[in-house]
Image (cartoon, rainbow, N blue to C red; front, side, top):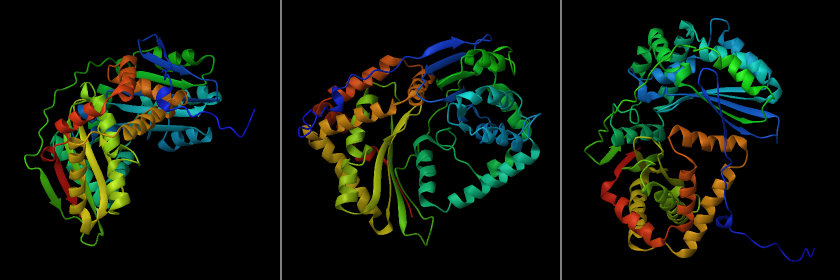
Length: 426
């Protein structure tokens, strides 16, 4: 081997990316289990997913509160005992409530799976919602909200979603002191009984599984119709965007920075333009070398960072440009954003820049598929959104083959400054 000769450089777009297939099993009571096996490390990730997000709320905040308090006490274990059982074995038991779904995720060493599954079963099937835990939850959340409302970026995020989707839509609804005060144990129990049932559960497993993993899952989650059967109908909720487009909010008279948000609605991931728009968004503001960063951070020095993102909500998406800048340059920052929008409309993306972004995006996907935990997350997103591997591969082909002319046409259609909501919070 001649070490004076460097190895050939291979562009990321030249790789033939394959999404590792999952194995699917069904527990005795019908719960589907999706599995990605890996023996690289003696660790395991187990995630239970329920249709129990804010979309299904009848009262504000009940989805998040129910999800949080399920781990804070059962008829057999206190919150302290649950946490000590998990911590003693070096594991993590996380819970999250999103717009459509709510999850419980266990990360642990393979050898401790059998010991920890009864704890997880207790949390999922027998939460007691202690009154003292609810009172503590209310107190803590109200304190966090009071602190966050002093931060311009937090306020800006709340308001831009309200402008895009409406005050009463799950995508635009925000927390409040009154909503926390209104939470009642009976409400949380009712939400739990309706949404956290065996027939609404899906299980995703990744990592190095013990030999009897499926038997253990069946023992703890598959032998009974726990919590009964509940048929959920996903309600159709109208979007009611604000009629005005420009907003200026004064939040902190002593602040030195303002939060800037420029956003517009956009079709969801099922629309044919969505994967194409991911490429254009990356060029515009989706990575550190984007046009927004090059202009507004590197050239003008208005901000430490500015980004553009596409929301991945199920009903509808949005384009959201966000940054924090000095109060005296917030308006100038907005002007520069609009200049970059119009530049993409008027001038095709140079081939060198397009090739760079292609390689960046494909490289990011390669990194996202590095390990069983990452692969199962990719599959989970596809399965929960009623998609298959063809959607994944079509997105790859879009990144590799989209042309500068297609990107320019997209910019003309979706990057008109007059279509964007504009918000500055100072």
